[in-house]
Image (cartoon, rainbow, N blue to C red; front, top):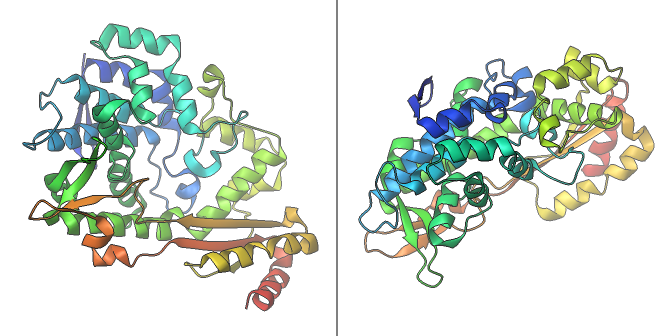
Length: 397
């Protein structure tokens, strides 16, 4: 049995027998009830899309990136459409987000154990039902193979496959930028996916023997467009002033009511946005009311978008005194920070016309001059907003 989906971003997405079986598991079906952008749908009404649609897109793009890399004459990848490595990377794309807590990244640090959503994904891959499914449909693949790939992989080929899912030029970014932009009704996330896929290449580090993903020189502008799309999506959507306030209220509600996301796989699968909202409706917390009835704290102060490290530390030092004067329960402080041009742990390399390699920041003058997004916002109870604003204007300036 196979499945076919009509996707607004990629057209038809087709799933083979293993992928179909995985899609029908509770772990993947649960993602239908996890919003991709957390609280952002309360700001951008179209942002109702789920993690489910994103993982289908990531699976589809994992196959396309694999094919693009394998088609190169010097590629280490097998171009056979049924190659085990291709099937593995598509399965990893499909399963990479199953450990996300309700509302995705909005409150991902509040598990009842010291784990994150990646570790929760590993736990879900380890349940007996997942092993039985792979045994029936995997044709030699196992959930341990997927878990190992999501953790970085063993050996040069697996490490290359791992980068397709989570790396410098990965399918996670490629899909969420286009998908989030379309659903939010903004144009910021657009970039030339087809040109990027046409110029993407596996590059070998002669010193270590490892392979990485880079681009041919002709793809530099497509790469720049992706970086620019990521920059604007963070500044305009992911770090939206109202969306950040609602995230803080969500976290405040969980902390105030003593709630946490379960680290037990069976219990975790019963937790989603719907169950969280249901619990929120029964709560007397001011933070729950802020989310449900838009009684959120207004913005009292905001720094500029690109603080230096010294400025960041100086503003952070003001917060304890602020909380002492006005009370921590009447204040919420967010620090939104991101390096939009740092796409992963290592550099994106560009292969020039003569075969030489250079870092993306050298090949692109535009990317070279991008700086880190780092901004603070202070929200307060309405009755103290003016006083908080005045104090911070005086002390910050």
